[in-house]
Image (cartoon, rainbow, N blue to C red):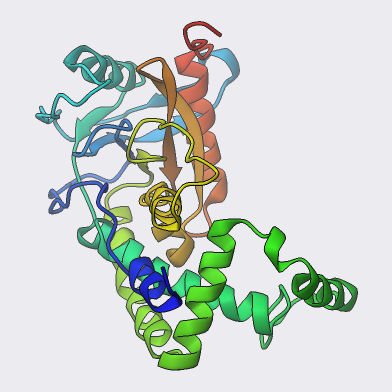
Length: 297
């Protein structure tokens, strides 16, 4: 595969993403969790009035009328039974939550495409021209690290992973031949992506998604074709990468087992409310109890 083909590959939409949905009208603000297990293509939305962190009895408390429970027809995918789905809903209900659904229109496909361009062009510029730091941003700069990185990068470039080299080559090609135009276009779309997530936070306080949109897979072979390697790496980022662009704080927490392998949910809070995401994670972790050990371990 030449650099031009690699550049085109990096801009292809990912095939495994959460299904696009329209927002539901939610009349009452409260704590909202969009809980989607690793195989839920339709996210669940949970609303409650507040978070109570009080040691072993940590829970999500609800006061007043919440949003009625919506019975979502989640598809029966491998590793996810209807009973598992009902158990997840029941556990959230036991914390005083009600269930609905919501989604951001650009979360499926568009957001990851934006990230692909920004990450490849931006990372290449930062690694190759910025010597690991970049320039023109206020903050701390370490001259020794920049100098060391710049020199060693040239000496040991072959030691970088295939994905890092792919990003560097793709970004370098794009910057040299497209002059940063696509980076600029992608950056200009970030405010709209941010607005879509912020729109959900007008009615809800926390969004919860699968950390990865599929169950654990076998490791990519060390000698796998570069196309397979890059595809595997990028598909893992379908739910996490959008928030790298928008700056919404997120944390990941184990949520259960699928086919005997762990799956996790990602809790996303409004910008600058990092502590809220951590409090929700603590509440869920306490209610869930000890995480089950995978079979045979």
